Length: 104
Image (cartoon, rainbow, N blue to C red; front, side, top):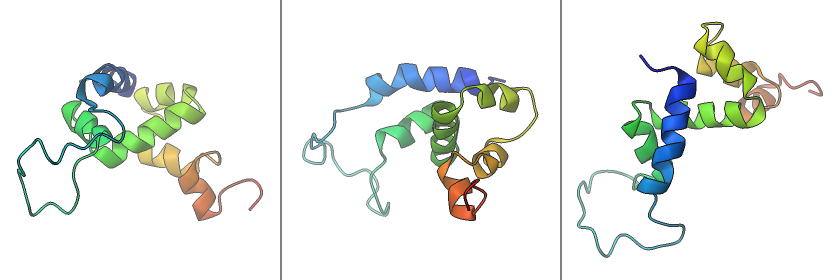
């Protein structure tokens, strides 16, 4: 089992390999694979799936690492989950929206 830190490092490595380029049209060159999908997968979604995470968990983990990389170690050591840290850290968007920020 990989730690969250290892998964994020793997995502950092894969991101430039999976990315097509910002603003570049890809719909003309690739045939439609699944027309029932509401939106196309973003690079972040593809990276998340490649490393074995859901896109939303991956997005939360990236936000946590951006605000306080030490929290990733706490998650890896079993002191909390991605969701717990994301919703309780006042510097992250979810906690601010819930009113857990110091000023609110």
